[in-house]
Image (cartoon, rainbow, N blue to C red):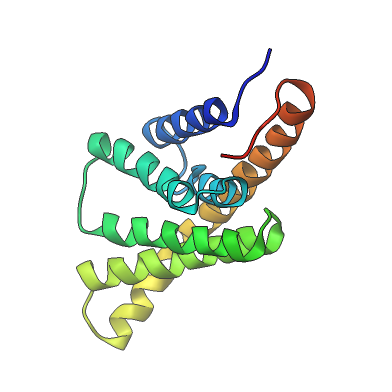
Length: 163
């Protein structure tokens, strides 16, 4: 049975959307993996950058949209840039992606919900530290799962032509 890359991507999008809708630890989702995977594996970088944003937006239509979503979406554009620069999923690209997500989204949380002081900024980042472990664990788990799955499926089930 031959499956093309489009089918694989549609599957990834569905998994990413569903993973955000089912109960899960905070920030333990495959969206970073989707961003890294897409930018690395697709020639059309506009489509590649849009894939994680599409996953987020569709699930956010159900979960709710607020001002923080802008910071989340932009963090995944930056994460796509990290994937583009590294060109592969490895510990460095995943760790840097997790850090960028943490710093950028929590900066948004500070702007929206904390006093606009240095103390408010520090308090915000300190309050967010427990969530970073979930972010990093999810990013590592899903990024390496995507990498291993793609390698397996390429060898066993289909050829993945570039688009």
